[in-house]
Length: 319
Image 1 (tube, rainbow, N blue to C red):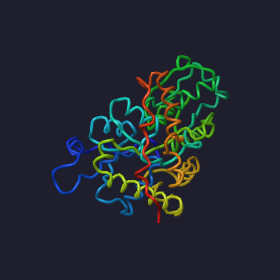
Image 2: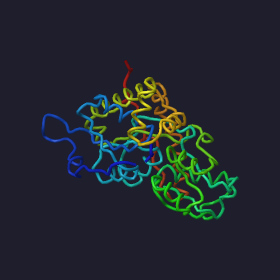
Image 3: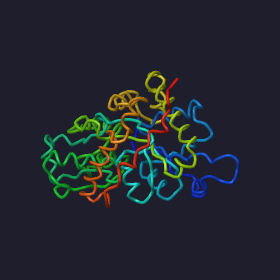
Image 4: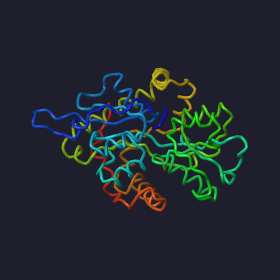
């Protein structure tokens, strides 16, 4: 469940930029995903044929692919963390959060070499981090808890998918990562020093679409959300089948999938409605994240969090 590794984007730019055409039928929404346990409902929906023709999944290697696709117009939407959605906004692409896929409850972690026992001992250490993704936000929170600044460590900018090899080479002392990388590092002797269970309801994975798609093809957005909830029901209720499918897709062990599933919360429809409500938790956290990211130079300015969420595309009920 590399949060953010798989196939490179392969869609031609003109397909999504065209948007709605003069034909009677609207173009499908081209939606970017990359392997992460919280996005598995959409992969499962595709497996079982629950995605309608109005939704086309575009599978990327990491969050960077989805963010780039949104910014350059080759994608109409994507599964991202909340901070990544803020980065897309900051790059000039107007996007709206239409669903929450999962909330991290221990999934995001810093794994350290055995000789590091306390957060304060990160001073001067080489820490692998994917700064453009959620790991960058995790690192800032970790350093704040440690009483350190980014200048007190040696940042090694790497996609999480490359952390394992860097660890084996002895290039890094710590990794800000998530499953299954965390378990693989643990098998190599790494210790879990801090995780997102200490940051309750802070790291959200969300479904975002461009404002143009929301305005011009709302039916496709609703179809996307229906498919997500159908896949989530299977993920939660058909445990053994889901574990098998996810492990096969991610080329990892069943136990790693089980750990990943135990480290996140999957919000149901009622929780989604609450999270996305005006002045709800997502907007509150978005503004707090944005202030921190501006201070750290990750955003150029504060966004208008009141324009970030729209719960109107959520299903009225689920069968």
